[in-house]
Image (cartoon, rainbow over all chains, first blue to last red):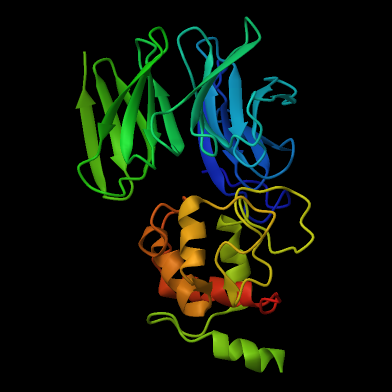
Length: 210
Length: 127
């Protein structure tokens, strides 16, 4: 067990974590920090996040790079793996509420945007953004997971549904829950299966797909 | 006098003992990422500023973009007194269906009472 250094702040509100390509685990704290732990040496470093509170989802690309998003800060950030310095990338929609992020097989960063109801993507190689609004009048995009076929799975709290986005066809398919208030905060899976934790109904659900 | 006034706003919540603002300040760290109780908070946060919330009608701050659901409840007369805050913390969706506040329910009545006591510390709503 590795406690966070208490002198940084009394409570960091830890959110999510991801391993880099060098065996260190990186984490975010919503109250305004991100950090790195090397479990082999127990060396831990914590940094203040750009713009303070808000660090939320974090992901590793296939090459082991680390990116995180800030919900309150409305940005995507890439960290330099040794110095820990964060470089901020501003999504095209202001105050979009970037909540979670997941890398696809090509290292593109897919982001679920809570305020805007968008799914957006940043391609570091092309230095290019793109974004799409989820179906419905006022979508609230919470979780994102990229499946092994590079299709994008998202959760929409307003529609009470899991949504699958095909980036090539730019189409959405919706899979509503059969109970109200599913409030899915996280999902992941494997080829042919999307696994869903319904925090509002205390159920685990699976969608099998082709 | 202020304490007496606040006392009337703080009935016990569920089976909880009276709220403890110091414990509530600690519990509020869960809320801190999205809310501030500093009336001069410079950051634009996900949630509305909660200073002087006791007695404030829902969706009242002019410079915050409330959800449609919250605006609807505000128009219907929802006021953030201690019982309303307790119910909202216990189950946000049941009080404001479609709320944008995504925090999981606070199931412990004592923790809710502590949070409400902490929120009351900034004083009552001043229209």
